[in-house]
Image (cartoon, rainbow, N blue to C red):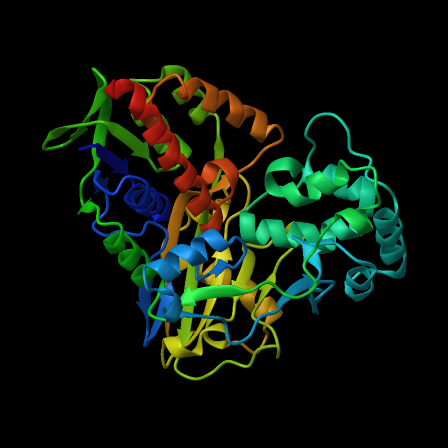
Length: 449
């Protein structure tokens, strides 16, 4: 029987365990999780009388693979869509609706350009860019450089930057186009006009959540994997032994055939160091940003812009706030108190994150009141912090990742999978984890002979 240690009980580790159950049903899988619960950043908490997510509140319906596993495990019937959906962006002292038909703010049609909150000059510049053939050649470039040169500075500042800063904690002038916007990068490298190559969705994307919270979804998937789950179990080292590995915690050492490390790049590097030092060094060079979410609650409903589910804040506003979600409008089934979630953190380390919880919440609330002047003091709040929790994809990220994978490939039976690699969304993490599980099993076969 094959034994595998999965280190990290977030959605990546759970997904590896699910894939191993499908690919090698007779294998024995153990998930080691340092905290006292499974799920990682999928964490459901209570604020006042309402259930709120501390991390991701939903996932985008994009690749069918995740939906298929949710159907297989009987969870599909528990998934629901938000009651309202529609982003606003803070521009020139007012809130403007974001158009449909964009890819992270990059318009994919002339209709999207016409609906965008751009000046007449900005719309003309963007339209001209869509009608020109892609001109990108050679190595990777920054998102900001390509968008400005091809579609104009207004598209960058008023559409792309607010979305990427608010959802990815990224600096568009340092962020890799190939890694952060792969669909846009592929279209930009074709010789046909962007209007024909950039396949932006014509309708708003679908998002789903578990009706009982993302923690419930994580726990159900972990149970369906059949893995032995060891919470409050911190792995301190991984060592090679013969054709397998020794996995040590503070209280025991276990011999296994394979190891899947499903942690952030810095944490993974510490465990890889002893068996693949070159790969560990490359992991250490991968960057991340720290972020926090502040959930505010009121006993009575708050008046908010109709038809919207939240706001995004451009980097140029220089606010503590990067985004906010009208939680109780999106998910009214979650409780009796009215909740707004505010987000803090951009590329690098935002100074506001050095504040204590009370001061951080106060700073976020002050920014919220700039956009919602009638907002009264909330009755409850909760701060959820995710140190180094958001991966940053700098220029040349894919090339760096290829060097890491080549270095780690010399160590069969050991894989690392992370949101730091090829996307931080739940479907992205799931796909990367299933691929890692297949590589792990493939690396075990020569060792058995």
